[in-house]
Length: 127
Image (tube, rainbow, N blue to C red; front, top):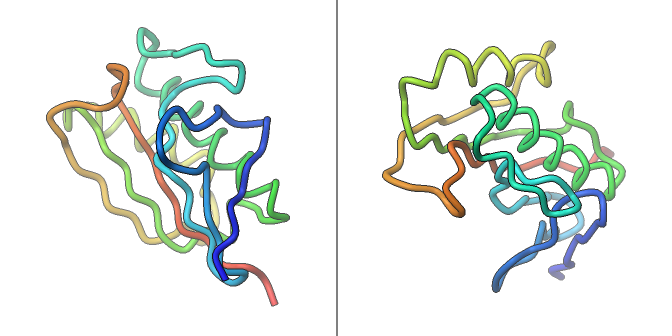
């Protein structure tokens, strides 16, 4: 049975989507842009700062479900400029130092609200 995950520790959904959903075994986060939980958009910040905020949002959503970043199986990173990959990757690595998840990173023509990065994750509940 699908269940919605919602936490005030990450930005509220601003459209017809949920912060995350789960079937009790797997958690799917929505794409997280560099917006603080109180709605401040960090779109003018460097890509490293935007990456960290996006991952902090993912982390907060997972923590609301009792999970950590180590429970993440797969991450998708969307960049509006693939030339930002190295700087994004350095910030990203801070969150996945041991046993990193599978990941895709790709360039897209635009992201919501003018953000430079959007990150979504799939995590598994622990036994």
